[in-house]
Image (cartoon, rainbow, N blue to C red; front, side, top):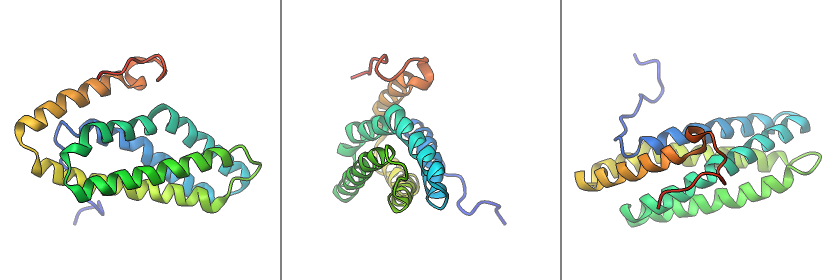
Length: 169
C-alpha cells in the first residue's frame, strides 16, 4: 500500500514551473490555517509571511497562469480559474489590511489559507491533468518555452527583487 494519500502526479515539462510555484502557496496556506488557531502574534506573523510571498511570487504566478493558460482551457475551467483567482486576490487584500491590526481576524486568516490550498489542489489534481491531455505537442512545446523563460526570470533564480526583474513578454 502506498504511503501517499495522493500518489505523485506526472506533470508535463510545460506545466512543471507552475507546479514548482505552487509549493510557496501551499506553505503559506498551511501557515495561515495553523495560525488561525493560535494567538494574535502567530496570526500577524503568518499574515506578514503571506504578504511577502504574495508580493514576491504568488500574485505574479496568478498573472502568469491567466496570461499563458486561460486561453488554452475549456470554458468551465477558465471561468473557475478566474473566479478563484479573483476570490483569493480579494482575500489577500483584506488579510494584508488586517495584518496591520493588532489581532488579524482568525476567520479571515483561516478562510484565505483554506481557499488557497483548495485552489492549488484543484489546479494540480484536475486542471493541469486536463491541460496535459487536451493540448497537442506543438501547444505544449510553445508553453514550455514560455514557462521556462518566466521561471528563469523569477526572483528566486535571478537573485533580484521582482521590481528589478525584467519579465519576458
